[in-house]
Length: 416
Image (cartoon, rainbow, N blue to C red; front, side, top):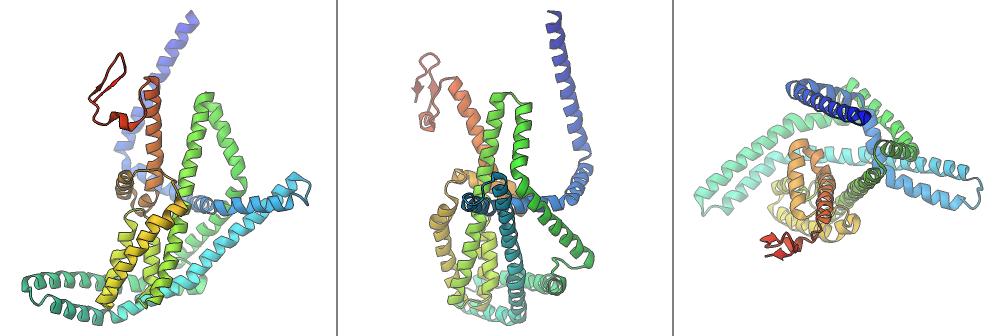
């Protein structure tokens, strides 16, 4: 009895200490927010190679897994030792993953970057004439409405002035330096120190990627070992199931969305080339990159692209808007569902809500991870609500709660 009471007091004391410690930590976090922020930023800077490697490993994981499985199945009949089969399949999958990464990086910097630079320089060279021609066209179109014409021309002049300033004062000089540096040493930014830092982070990141791909099974096993050691068996199984669901949602959505955006970018390039549109490479890159963002991506990419084409030809701008509408309909109704499937299962409203929330908090990266992150949160909340309803022996069907007035406490009948 004494031991039981003593243990009871110990539990209460430990709980009180934990609450006090958490409260003090939270108060310190609020009062020293800038300091904490600087410390976190410093840690992220130090661990950038690991972060790069983890991201690359996660993106190349489907390639690695499929190649490893394919090689393993084909050499299993000729190589008897299972350990040798695993080693050979891992080595082959690693080489293939590295080859895919190198092809993407080299192709991007040797083909895409020079074309983007060429398009931007051509835009700068013809900017003045294009702006004047479009202004004349707008004046003719709005000649019958002087007040509207005055307002439109005023807004147009402000926009073009800001565009010219940004283009000539920031983008072109940076692109010039960027092109010179990349042509000399294949770096990613101006300045020798910055180039070496980024190059160092990227190369170490590739090494980290190779390690992570080859020890991912061991890391997963160690993680499961920790979970089963910390939690009771039932809760541990639930945690493992939730983590498996998180991996499924994130892996399926992010890799699928990147593949979807790549296909859309290539289709945009081919079709715009056939239509003889201006700035084909630049517009295709903008459309492909922004397509990674769900819901808002097509609009974010189409607006600046349409404006660039408008400076050259209003008619081609109209054709481009129609083309983008048809392309996004194809992507949203055919290509996207084919690639992504039901990877998130998130209703449309919550897709919009999550993008606005995470985009506001974390910017462009937040908009990309918003949907899978909120899908996980949505699923967890739904699971907790359904678990509580089961305990109370109530219906799990949402339709039963439509126009519900109350539930009879005795008969458990639903009164509308």
